[in-house]
Length: 232
Length: 224
Image (cartoon, rainbow over all chains, first blue to last red):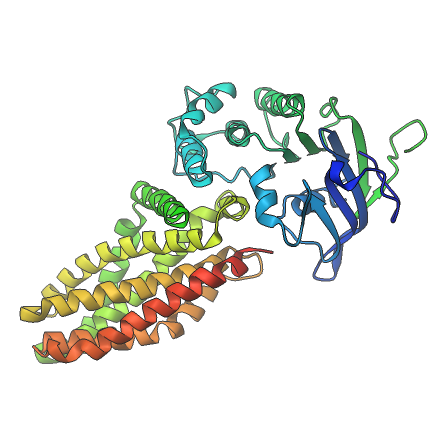
C-alpha cells in the first residue's frame, strides 16, 4: 500500500485492490471522512489504526460499498464505487461490528442460508464451521451463542467464498482468545492465497502480519503519533 | 430463474424464523381476535347489524394485524445487522423484496383462515355458495397487503425512520385493498358473488402495481 498525495498515484490502477481519490463522507453536517486519498495494492495486508470516531469504519464501509462517498471517487478491484457495486460485492467480504446472523437460526442454518443465497455449494458449510471450532455447536440457535462464537460463525461465512478483498472492522472487539485466533487465522489464510486484507482495529496486540499501517484521526489519514521513526 | 431461487431462499429463511418464534400464532392472531371482539362489542348484540358489518370488520382486523406482520418481518433483519448482509450480498435486491413479500403472504393466508372462522362464529356469518369469491378476495388482498408492507416495512430498519412510519405509509396506501375486499366480500356474503368481478379486478391491478413497484424501487430504499 502506498499513501499518496492528490494527483500523485503511486500504484498503477490495474495493480490496486482499492483506490480512493479525495473521498469525503458527510453524515448530516458532520464529516466522517475528509478528502481521503488511498491506494491498496493487491495482495497487501493493510492495518488501519486510530481513535474512536477517526473514520476507520466509514472508510471500510465505503470500500465495502455499504456507504457511498459524498464527494470524491474510487474503485475496488478495478470496479468503480459508483457503478460497479454488484461486481465489487461478488469479490469482497466484510466482517464488521455486527455479525449479521439470524438469532433464531442455528450457526449451520445461517451459513447454509448464506451459501444458497450467494450460489456457494452448501456442502462447504460443515468444513467452514469445523475450521473455526464450531462443529459441536453448529445446530444450536445463535441466540444462545457468546459474542466470540458469533464472530467465529462470521469468520466461517467469510471463508465460504474466498474473497479477493477481505475487510475487517474491529473484528476483535469483545472476543475471547479462541475467537481472536480464528480471526487471525482467517487473515493469515486470506493473505497466503494472495488476496488483499484491510484490517481496522484498536487492539495493539493484533495486526502484526500487516505489511503497512495507516493511522486515521478526524476523518483524515495522518502520521502515526505513536510511531518512533519518520513517517511514510 | 436466479431471482426466483434467491427470493425462495429468503422466503424459506423468514418462514423458518417465524415457525421458531411463533410470532403470528402467539401475537398477531390474538391481536386480530381481540380487535374482532372489540368491534363486535362496540356494535352491540343486533345480529342483523353484525352480519352487515362483518365484511368491514373482517378486513379492518386483517389490515391492522398485517401491519404487525410487516413489522415482525424486518425485526429479525435488525437484530444483529442482518439487513446489511442482505444489502451486501451479490444478489438482485428485488429478490429480498419478493422473498419477504412471499413469506408475509404465507403467514397472512394462515391468519385469514383463522380470522374467517372467528368471524363466522362471532358474527353468525355463513360463507354460503359464494365462498370461492371470498377466498379469491382474501388471497388477492393478501398479495397486495404483503407487497405494500414488504416494500415499506424495510423503512423501520432505517436509522432515520421511526416505528410509526410503517402504519402511516401502509394504511393509507392499503385503502384500495380495504374497499375492494370489503365490497367483494359483502357481495359474496349476500349471494351476489357474480357482481364482484370488478372489485376482484381492482385487487388484481393493485397487486400488479405494487409488486412491480416493489421490484423496481426496493433497491433504492435499502442502498445508501
